[in-house]
Length: 172
Image (spheres, rainbow, N blue to C red):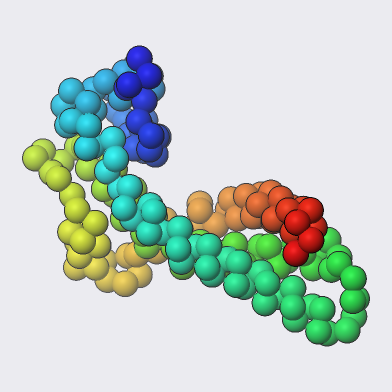
């Protein structure tokens, strides 16, 4: 059964989220049906925009966070570690900026993964991007971003607690 579980489970998550009632009996049934009906490549649909999205997210997120931390230290208010409120604000703003920078690729990935309902569809990253721009314009690239931003505080907070702990552990 382990051969049915893809290395990129995002496709399964997307399909299970968008399924019709009774379409899949569970995770393994979803994987089995995708393999039978669409082949192995379908399990990796959206992998390229997912991997490319890491670059603008990480670069923007870390750059904004470090810039805010630097501004705080240069302000002279507290030369030690910034307070919890300052750190939380920095995390929230930097993670929000990172999400905004990478969201168009996240949207393209999700649309590619959801294409199981379109008969004969084999969506490409470029084709999905062009379709969004043609139908909805540039604002269409940020459609549905609100739920993504709602997870910023908890996800960003956890990430940066680990990030700061590792910096201290490594002496950076």
